[in-house]
Image (cartoon, rainbow, N blue to C red):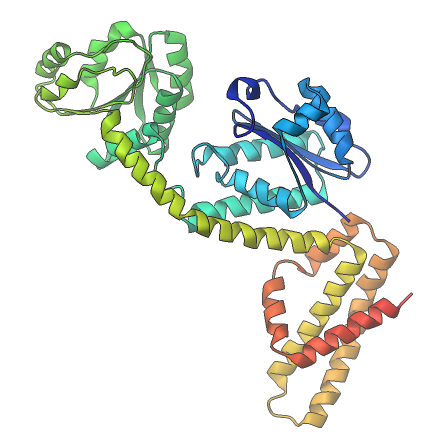
Length: 435
């Protein structure tokens, strides 16, 4: 029986200063692999995880503990061990942002995809994990499109951008100045780019960091000595530096606004301590928003995201069920059983369509003829799988006959026909009795 297992080390179980030193290297995972096994490693700033199948739990624990420099006992205390459907469900939750520090954040899916690309390049994954990861991507996409969990910004930086978009209906045409190149400023700058802003200026005390971020965003990098000119030219300002005192004062903005002929400017201060003096809002046409203005909205948005969790978990449970059925069917017996179930579905479908104008005797003759023909057709793949029960042959057979794609519809329709169910059981019993 194929069983997927997982070791997860994340921010909930380990202090960040320790977690940032933990990494499960894909190269090291490759050295763990045994014939027929598969593995997948995911490393982000908030978690380090390994998923595997085909290897013993204790052997993986020993190798991972050696890799990160702790004893197996200590690894057991700081990690979460999952197996079977629990590990599948966990991966789906991680990729969908339900396990993230910021609920529903979208960046994690990109990291999951990148880790999968590495796993492909290193030949760490095969049939089982290819299917698992693609089902993971599908699940995350469904949650993103079928729920509102990602539509409410829950970080101050994201809300700052949403506020700017609200003030400027066509923000794409606005000139935006981002002061700072740290985490919050970077999030804001990237989100501005995602919203279509093409004219972004990054201003930072360390010009090299400004250049790195500006290059990523196709923007312009400036040093602090150009602050006045940058403020004069900008429609929107988002600032988040580590300064211990305000870098923009009321007097400075009063002078700049004269040069701007009092053209409106939206100033969003997400720094702590503040980068902009509160009195700046007294300058005509300076619209200043700070953390106090944004936190209430962020808290309200977080509550809205939490309302979407139940719907997201429903999607995850459905997708876990789909994958689990596929995994359980990934053997000769399960696949042959599903082939006979498919055969009975086709027979039932034809009888339902063709027998409304004929009597019971003719219906019985037609049913026997259909079953005889179907058995002759299905006998070939059944015989082949029995003689060659390899995973790749089984997976190809399941894909050719689409045994997993429309399972739900076939199952529901077959349940409406007791006769079809009895015939299906009869065919399964016939299979069991064969050598």
